[in-house]
Image (tube, rainbow, N blue to C red; front, side):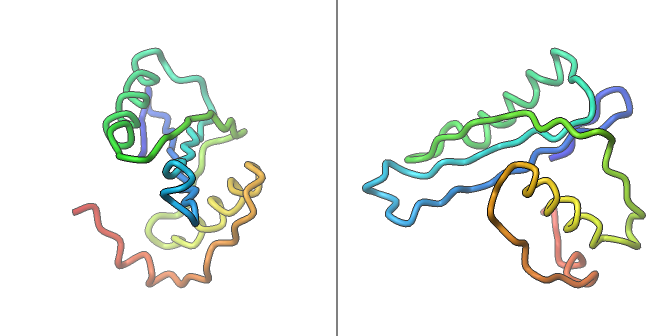
Length: 117
């Protein structure tokens, strides 16, 4: 999700911390991080919280938390010519959050399969 606030953009990084033994652990934990280089307006903040709650709040056996990850500058890349920059950026965010995940190898053409349908 991209949120624009006065020509600036913030992003949500969502990590599904899927539990191996789903039923005995009481469900899954979703970790949502709002990645931004500016402070959101009250209305934008309410919009993000409402979006998260609409998407995740009514899921059975699932809970979520949201934290803000402040970055120094807005993510900028040469769309659509350098899509691998997205992977590099997300990997850096994951590292900043102290999450021990390495994203799989990708090629530019892998981004051709993405859809918002």
